[in-house]
Length: 306
Image (tube, rainbow, N blue to C red; front, side):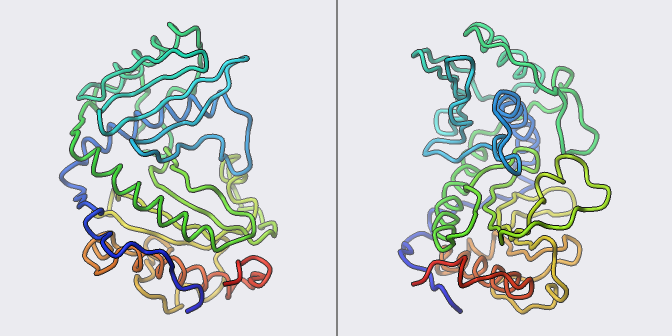
């Protein structure tokens, strides 16, 4: 296999905590709504970037951040701190305010966040209903989701820290167009996406979001904590458009999921491996090579030479 991994920490195994979905699914559901509220604030206040990259959150050394958001001649930033379990709102004129991350209904979180922004002379208006979830409840009416287990929120973030680190190493091998490593609050996954440079055929019946997101050929990798019929966290890889025969390609580690139409690697496999970093990098490299080869990407022009 080309592009062997480098700079892999030999003691990285202890940095990857367990995250059984059944132990934190209520916290997961609540946190999903909170990140959607914060993400929609960023989306509303920022100019459109290709593939909706202006809407995402980023992993930090303490949690997740919007990065600076413009507001007139000022900027503000909203940060989830999963160590002290606070939501911080920081402005470019030196003001910092915070909300507690603790068990509370989504409706209360939403109201207090908007009131806090208003106290900073920041008025925002968002589409106040979640996306990409079944039976969405408007944020102002959501008293169903009200759980927050600090231990599991911290574990989730610690996995994001490790995945972000390895994804960035994988990203460095590619010199073509590539997304940042970023967190999508709609699907609640951390992802990094490579592009061939060629436009993709428009998907029949695609909405505006999907049309923008998949306007060009991509190979994407990510981490998702699971949900619905998927009862465990996993890493994934997909090529879009998917070339013929991709599902038959031998990759290692991991396998092709017909149900999900993508390659998957269970998080527990990475957690239990002798070198989680090596296992994850091997999965990402082998699935990328399978997609790029079958889709006839110009790999010599897109990949960094050793």
